[in-house]
Length: 142
Image (cartoon, rainbow, N blue to C red; front, side, top):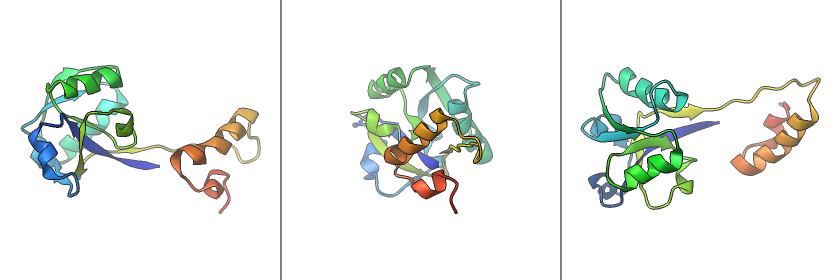
């Protein structure tokens, strides 16, 4: 599953006026203060790597280990954040702005086709319901 990151900002932030339909370029965000996860976490690395790959610098003004606290800092106007789009519906009260050339979150699952545990079988039965995936691909069928 590949999930692009989106920028989240307070509703009164200038980014919220972009209409949310056309993605803003990553370079448009370099002058913003950011709220992000602490350095060293995979969630932070995705954004750090996207900016580095584009040759851009950014200022992380605040760090938070908890997603809800991070969202509270953004709602409070202390910065913007880049988050996987699938997380954003859990965070009401934020303006959501698509980002072009931004980070993406890619998740993969691996299991044995021949010796699947009961837990793996149960997990694979509910995953398509949660992510809207193709059940045949999850069961290893081609």
